[in-house]
Image (cartoon, rainbow, N blue to C red):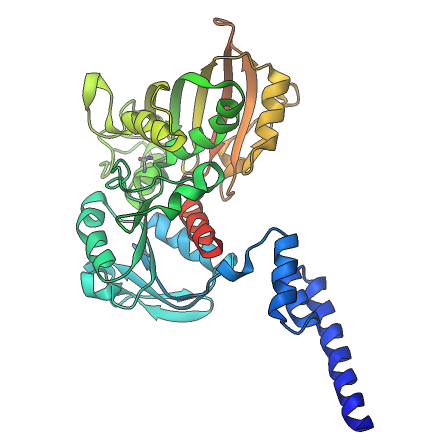
Length: 392
Ligand code: 2RA
């Protein structure tokens, strides 16, 4: 009996010391699990106190990344690895061109498989970054095979039965996906809406005038090589053939992104209006967009003017931006502090600065906004949606 008593106490002590190791590494829930010996009752009470619903945290059995070799797909992989997204098995799908190639994930080699309907058998969750036509044809097939799809393409975004989600803005919408597809917005919309959301909540935004300065990486790997080849050719005084853009992009700005649609606006510009309204759930917001491709490798910039029902001072705007999750304020032009692509690239946040009251209208606020279009504008947002679903 005394032996048994000693054994139990030594075990309890070891467990408590072990739990301290997890605490040191900031893993609070794991620490508590070990400390209390995973007692469901205690865990439930603690989870309630910590406002975390532990019972809903799931470990995905199987996930897939579709378009794994593209500009966005590559970053999705990096984020899944860095953020320790919980899953048991993963597969990487891409077009026929990449099939059979190998990529490394978490130190292990994986062979890329073809993205075709039966590749989704047994896959619980897919994060897809593909051209629109592929998303149109492939994702419903994936859903038929039991896969929940998070889609980066533009194809499903305006479908009434497909939620269009930015986790900092309307995360809960992701839970109502009757078609089994959840869309991530266009990159230029995401940074606009993250920045505008706190202003809208405080003062109701009536109108937005937005001019974008969009990086070449938004057009994929071919866009980046057009700029690189163009800069090289310019330096050598040679001609070069553009593969992606209709004009040379080096030393140039092209005031057209996408095809011309209604009233002379392009598809890229109209996305800024329709997607903003859908995400904010407010069809009364009027948007006047101009989208321009600029010779910047990565990060979209936007000059934004919002007209609100109630006045927002610069100080109030700074406070509202600062309280918005995912927004970083860099607003001191006298110290040359403002967001710029070369400082924002590789970051997951939306940066705002140059905050000014409108000189032409009483309830207007002008600001500058920069975000990494491949990260928060695409990969990060999709992975955040997956993380939200995993926890809720
Ligand atoms: C672009 N917004 O920058 C597009 C990519 N989705 O071309």
